[in-house]
Length: 256
Image (cartoon, rainbow, N blue to C red; front, side, top):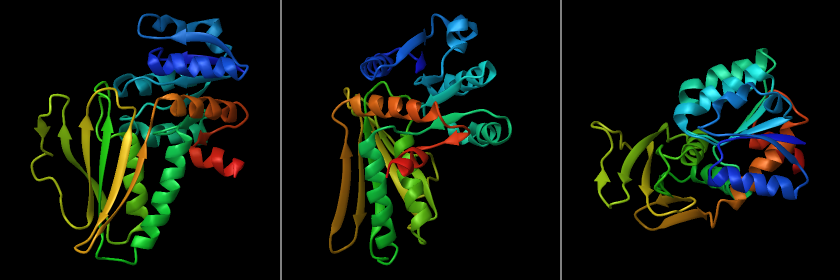
């Protein structure tokens, strides 16, 4: 399979290493200094592009893939709330293909299956209230993380008394704390997501169900970015033979 990489930082390099180990060819590497390569023959020859960049540029990168007729796998977060409906429509009606996930880790996918099952159980135990904390490296620009939002939306969908999620506190690398926006919703029908940015933490997500009597906590702690990179390559392999709007449920549903 021919792969184009969009974003050639630490994650891009790790994806490249795993892709080569799995017998694939990297035909194009696009970063901030060579944007003109979106128009290259090498890029158009790719079976799939893997995009890991920043929220401000991810949508435009996906559109350039669509324009070139290249299927795309994107793990960039922070842009779906604004553009998700449009890209889903492009995949449904315009013949485009996007595999998007807030997190490509196999472990995180399993973690969300556990999260979903626990939420279904907790739907019958009103004395428990959920909250969430996510911790990431200092380079991550968006908060809460896309993974935290996905986990929270799972709880909202499964628990009748939880109607929405809300932004909580942000602990910055220097230890200072930014409170949520004025009028932030801390009501009982809301799951609040607190964020922390420190060091080079690949990603920690903890969900707590608290009651007066006790609490139950589940946590996923990524040891490195390797799990994310492997999942992205697996997604590219799946995307090469599938079309439309694709997700981790499609890929792992086919595997299970």
